[in-house]
Structures are given as C-alpha cells and as structure tokens.
Amino acid sequence: MVRHNNVVPNGHFHKWWARNVVTWFNQPGRKMRRRKARAAKAAATFPRPVAGALRPKVRGQTIRYNTKARLGRGFSFEELKEAGIPVKVAPTIGIAVDHRRKNKSLESLQDNVKRLKEYKSKLVLFPRKAGKPKKGDSSRDECATATQDTGAVLMPLAAEKPELEMVAVTADMKNFNAYQKLRVERANARIVGLRKKRAEEAAAKAKEAAKMK
Image 1 (cartoon, rainbow, N blue to C red):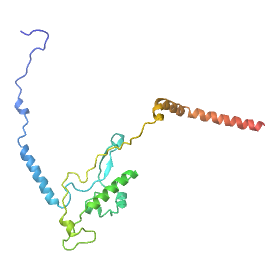
Image 2 (tube, rainbow, N blue to C red; image 1 turned 90 degrees about the vertical axis):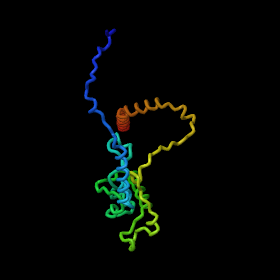
Image 3 (cartoon, one colour; image 1 turned 30 degrees about the horizontal axis):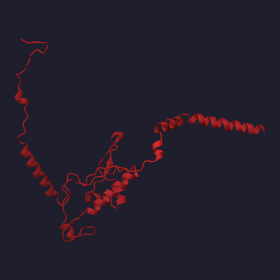
Image 4 (tube, helix red, strand yellow; image 1 turned 60 degrees about the horizontal axis):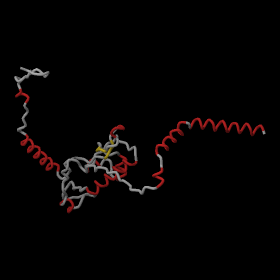
C-alpha cells in the first residue's frame, strides 16, 4: 500500500531502449586513418606548410566581437605594397590575397606588414628547376636544411597580454573624489547651452551700453 502524498508509481519499462544505444567501436581505427591522412597530405605538400597560405590578422565584426582578433581571408593590396611583395607574386609564395579588403586603421596595417615581413624572413624558396636557380631563390644549403611547418595554423596569433604600468600613489590621488568630479562634469555638459546664451546676452547688453555712451 502506498503511503503519504507521493507520486503514484507509473514506471514505463517496456521501451525499445536498444535502438537508442550509440556505440563508438570504430574510434581507434578512425584515429589511425586520420593520422595517416595527415601524414600523406604533409608528404604531398612538402615543402609547403600543411596549413596552407598565410592569413592576415583581422578584427571580428560589430561592437560585440571587434575586441577579438582572428585570422582573415587574405592580405590587402596596401599591406603587400608596404611589405614590398608584388600582388601577383604573393599567391605563388604562399600568401593569401583579398582584393576586397581595405585598411581602415594604421594599427591593422602595421600589424599585418610586420606579419608579412616575419614570414618573408623565414621563407625558403625552392627553385623551379633544381639545377637552375633564379633571382630570389634560396641557396642550396638553405633548401637542404629546410623543414616543413606541420602546424594546424601557419604563424598562429599570440594572445595579447595587457601591459600594466605601476605608479606610486600620491596624496592628490588619495584626495581625488571621482564621484564629485563626474557630477560636476555632467552638470557642465547639461548647462553648456544655457551658459552660452547668457554669455551672448551679456555681450549684447555690453554692446548696447557702449552705444549709449
């Protein structure tokens, strides 16, 4: 007999539970297959980086995401020009180009030019024909010691750490009343029009008084 004010037992234990069971017995095999595919891709693309072309540092869109930096589609023409890389040569040496992107700030331009120059300093250009190197190609020793970049991202973005400046606390800082200062500045902004009107009226009265003399 059920006692007290509890839920009446009404269990449903005749469901077809076996069809909802998900197994993952092929996980070790899939892991091995992915590993072999990565190795095959690296071997096929050698000596080029596995991650593909170099991407620029850009900011996310809208006020919600513009505080975060991410990798964009390609470098702008202006950035390539500042770095001294011809637009038509850039895709041939592993640099992504976006003809639609425009630089809206000096900071983004400088960051991406610095990124391009760093990439250019590390770049090893193999000659198209082994026995006939052209101008701009790397030397035979550099080609022999070149290693492949196998990372998931080519030149990943480093996390930006804010630099804190330590200062000594002065007596003026201790005596400063931030709330009072804010109230005064709010009042000044609110009555700026009234003060301007009064000043104009006072100037007009002074002008009239000077005429009467």
